[in-house]
Image (cartoon, rainbow, N blue to C red; front, side, top):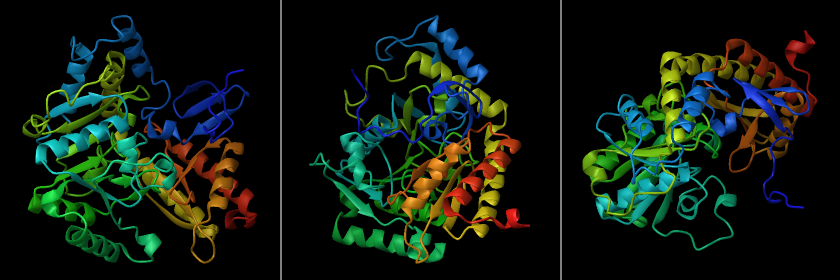
Length: 425
């Protein structure tokens, strides 16, 4: 009997029968409030009618039109629509299928545009699992161990993880920027450095927002040294953080932007955007791919962007995200096992720690499993696996946030054996 690889561990035992909006309906007859959204992919919720209709209509026209062979209308429309939301000056787009592919395209472009070999990444970043993308990933050794040698030319600098260091944010930012400057003196000279690559909010690294002052410090150094600043918006983009792009919580702007995940509500498509003058420096043949910019995925992306705009989903993510974080901080006040709550918009992380402040992966894993029993789907993340992450769809309602918080608190109470103050009164 053929089975899936035994290495593919399921985060939940749920088998989906069908799904709609924020809800997954299992073959077990139970309904689950989905705060995983396919790891931040189903941005408009499951099976949004407008996305379903756009994909269904496109399937009846043409499914695969390889876009360096023949062009198709959905990709032209998507490219025009991206022009309305991309940062000023990023007026040229290359399409691929996955975040990893887009990351590799971005670093390839940066190296070609600058003629420099080295890429600086930041501790805790996740950029994918393909060999080059895994070489850039520092969110955990599990993503890069066992298949060395990895791609050379990658250097890692500290991320301003204030909670881990026990510092305030300003101190953490000053330290991280100081260490980055020291990296220039000891490992990669500025004129050997092609790019900085960073997520506006660390994903697998623990749902840590990158402090605006750090983003702005990177922008200043990039300008001073002629380095390309690449923002990996694969998970934080398309409204997830309560801004259309995660980096918009700072004044820093990218030279190259990477997007994927939520752009097409579950259909595989990714892209990088850069100024035309930069994109033109890519060598002939360095960009391409059989399935990149697939017609059905592009049609779904067009529908997704229309839904995000017309249904006010970026603002909904901000408001619902504030409610979610406020509720989580109230829960934190009742359970000592929760060391930290942080995030932006509908991208919230809950870090579990022991009494001495060290990572408590066992409790985080147990809570994540217990939430399933409560009818709430969640995931863990972080290098130590001690962060539970909540990623509701951008269409999530106030009532669903309230219900999610109730179910999350019940799971924490079940695991820790603690009775929340509200339940005692």
